[in-house]
Image 1 (spheres, one colour):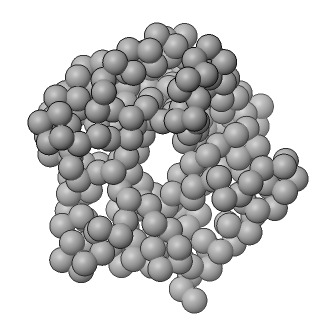
Image 2 (tube, one colour; image 1 turned 180 degrees about the vertical axis):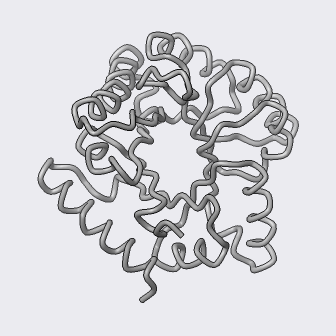
Image 3 (cartoon, one colour; image 1 turned 120 degrees about the horizontal axis):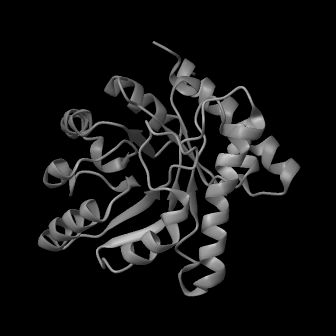
Length: 234
């Protein structure tokens, strides 16, 4: 068993243990390997260990890796999630290449995506990125603006709005980290209470990375994005 496979098996066991304590189903949590800067060989190792989806941060890296995966007849087996910021001028390059977007954070981006998706007769599952830490250097809409933004995104028929994403504050204070995740969950729950007709689809919470994923699961994460925990720091 490769080191990557061993790490994935260990993480899955830890997910199961946490879920048992808090009465959650571990199968409802997607372990998303973040493969930024990692070679295609590492992606294939993660796939062989049971991970059918990967997360990438940069458009150019996605395009290069998908090209290489296609040559190796591996691309169609994987769901490609773009978890980093997407600039509007890169939309035409990425539509039809990625399977999921975690970082929708503006109406301008929604409009560009809708136009390109419509041209290609495609739909794209998306998550709205929310800046729950309120840090200026981070992308995402502010929590107070989330309810209205959710409502507006639902007007774009080719965007399948499935939930929310956040990056928690980097902090030694667990309470501060937990508050970021709790704020995201609260936005989702409040929308589901007001708009139950969307509840079956609007359920994903992409939150938790290598330093804080266990807290994220305790706070309701359905997608955790892990890089160094799976691949190491090389």
